[in-house]
Image (tube, rainbow, N blue to C red):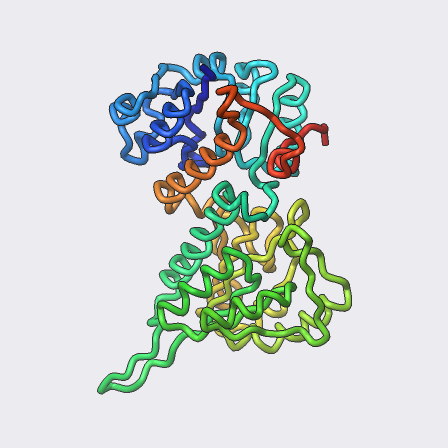
Length: 366
């Protein structure tokens, strides 16, 4: 019987969890033993009793859980203290960005730990149930609009009253991936006039299907990788995009920035000049802030006011929806472990001919 363990994250940074009481039952049905640190999800209102009732075993210290576990499920990279307790040649699964966590990942590789990062998951049909980027970005796009609207402090939809008509707010979404599309859908539901832009021309149909207007860069080509992600634009494209946005940015009340390039710094799309051209009281919410930001003046967990324009971004916006995000994330992790599980041998089998496994396994030091 393989042992799967998970410990509390640093709650100052991360409120999501990797195992819910629902997924404990699914794991035990596959003959896994589940070890959790006591009060694992108390901050989300999930009691230890619920976990015990579904078959989990609870230990008083994180060290104990990590030392006994053969498979460890996490949200973020382990701390240096946790690394010391993790078994050599164990399996670690989570959502690990190698750029900010290079040193920790290299230490784990030296211990022979097999590290699977679901951030590297290929965008293929068979992997959809494991797609943490999509499940989490979906919520991030929704929440970014809610946070922006709250900060905006004005009505979003058109309202016709005896005292006069309130015009609808205008929202621009930069990047029409999963987060961007959800931002478009949320802003439309609230009654805003929405436009969007993306380096992938295939996004045009998706944007328009949600009722948004797609801003097309003149002579644009489809800048999409074979895995379905955006790739870096040419200098010529960037110049044309800048010209397009110069005119559209200043006419919008709220801008949601979501543009990311896997493994690279976020592209700077909104310049200082563009921010200063916006109306006082306008909002920019930068979901790419942890990767350098799409907008000038964006800083994590700060609201910077520039000529009356508020530029915002959170280190972890999903902490505002931690329970919902955890439910989806835990299901993604279960689906991934289930794909590793060989039902005939009733054991984990790392088949590197499986694209899902080979693409997510980090085997080389950075």
